[in-house]
Length: 93
Length: 176
Image (cartoon, rainbow over the protein chains, first blue to last red):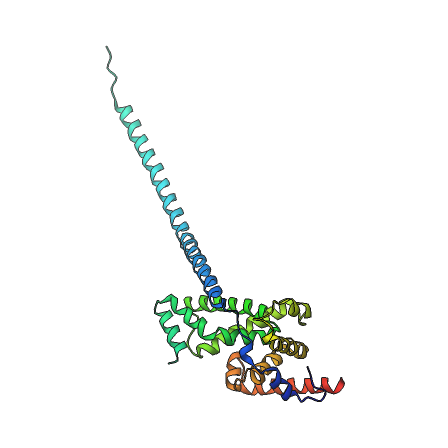
């Protein structure tokens, strides 16, 4: 309890006494390490998502180029087929 | 190099389990500091746990540059986290929170518990920086240079904070 005419420094000193009594619960270290472990797992997940986010634009560009190439190849093939059809000679019986 | 610095170096070299050594070596002091800032041990444990996770993230992310001692760096994280926690719940320590806290290891520590709540109540009217400086200096017994590093200000500014804190407390006592 506060003494009536207690000086500021004396009061601070009294309140700082027996510091060994203020300490974490015995399982506190284990609790912290568990939280760190969870953080590590979340960290892995975030790293995967971050990497995935980096890959998405590259994958989109690759898909667009592949589609473009496929369409072009198809139309070249169609043109070639059409040309060869025009050049064909019908055999009359 | 101290054991703590060695443990951090070991951690940074890839031994992730070395963080346990950091926790073992510092948790008592950090929880005590936070409890003195917050007025009870339960909140202090939550705050210090969060502070360790933050420190872990910083170490992994390469944000600890080693300019200050590991302990001072951890103190800074805990001080800032405790200030944030106090702001989040409002300035005054609700007495019911302190009384609701389960007893610590029997009645032996009742005095320490009361001391924490008395300290929090007494200093609750001081501005945050003055309170923190006073606790670090007069209760935790740190030097002005270390407090300046923790609060990221000059030693002169720390001295000013301490003078202002004492003046405010003296004025309040005289008014009472």
